[in-house]
Length: 119
Image (cartoon, helix red, strand yellow):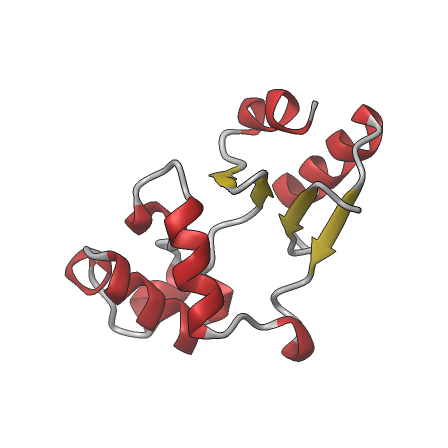
């Protein structure tokens, strides 16, 4: 049984780092390629992830050029429910990587958060 889940974007160096650290630690893990159509999370999964997240819910949303392109502002993601709505519509805005173990989730940024979590 995998005890670690990594929400992974293979095009992201920080996300690749998290996978490499899990491999190096010898952790059994599953990779969730959430950017693929078949891996996109449903709202219920996002809500569950938010309930496990040690970080503030709003931190789960990337504030990048796409965020601005979609016309979003911080007030659009200032509650867990709003975060779930935005990520359901725009899974590409999910901060990455996200690591989940034993009912606890963290955002793997900065990178130094990853090794102790996967060990």
